[in-house]
Length: 84
Image 1 (cartoon, one colour):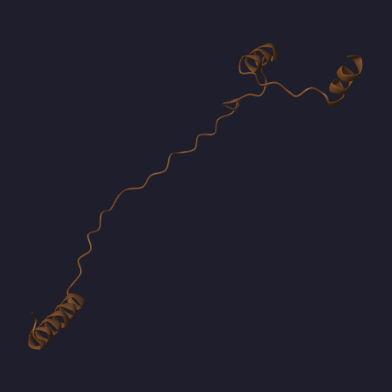
Image 2 (cartoon, rainbow, N blue to C red; image 1 turned 120 degrees about the vertical axis):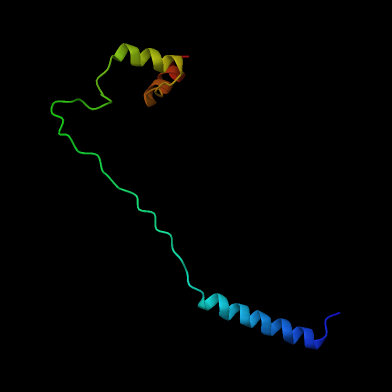
C-alpha cells in the first residue's frame, strides 16, 4: 500500500513534471508546399457537357424499359368507370 509519504513524493514529482513540460521549448516543423492554380483558358463556342436536346423516341423507349411512366390524366379514370 502507498504511504502518505509516497503520495506526497508522487504529487511533488507530478508537479515538477508539469512545470518542466510547460517550460520546454516547442519545435514546430514547417513544410512548405508550393500552391499553384490552373490557368483559366477562355473557351469560345463550346457546348455544355450535357445537352437537353435529344431524341424523343429514345427517351420514350428508355422510359418504357425502366417502367417510368407518367400518371394517367385525372379524367381518364372517370371515363373508364362510366363506360364499364
